[in-house]
Image (cartoon, rainbow, N blue to C red):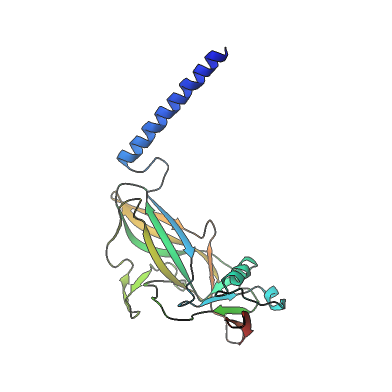
Amino acid sequence: MATVTALTGILVSAVVAAVLALYLDVWSSSGAAPGTPGVSAQAEMWWDLSRDHRTVRADASEGKRTNLGFNAPGGSSSMDSMIARGGVHAGYLRVRLILVNFSKAPAVVTSVRARVVRERPIPAGPTFRCGPQGSGEPSRVKLSLAQPRTPASEVDENGDVLGRYPVQRYQLAKQDDPGLFDIEVTAGAKAYDFVFEIEYQQGGRKKTVVADDAGRSFTLAPIPPETSRDYVCNPQLNAWTPT
């Protein structure tokens, strides 16, 4: 009986292996695997404080803390902690968008938009700012939450608008050649949670893929009024100093 069971297990394993091999062979020869999207999208915030201002409108509890050391370099870790405790970014975000084509059919990107998920209350705490400490290349792709359904625009080195992004045809050809986009999103009049919608054409059809922040929405609030409490990072003192 044990011999029969062992032989049956070997036979079943062989059948599964054959089916899996056929599945992978069909995928590699005909395009995307069943159940996978034509284009996959990921997005992440990133900051180069040699050229970017990072601003956080913090929760009210931050104003009661006595230890305002900002954990150099650039205050990034303490600002991340402020966000985790209920703060939100303000003014603008820099976002790196990564697109990968999982089909052998080329995909042509036609537009990038912001889709507002909800309005959210603005935290009542102080504002913390850090950077820039030098100069660098600005983003050439701009989105504004003041008009969230307006597609992203492309600008030249002087900041003049060239047209709707992408101005030139942008094609995603294959998996090992992902598309990388550096997008600057500016705030609207209120604080919003939002995601990115990327429209593209593939196989004669119009399609849309959504990119968020690792399963969460991005959040951006307007710059606070000048009367608000404000701190800036001080690299020499390794602390936040009031303005």
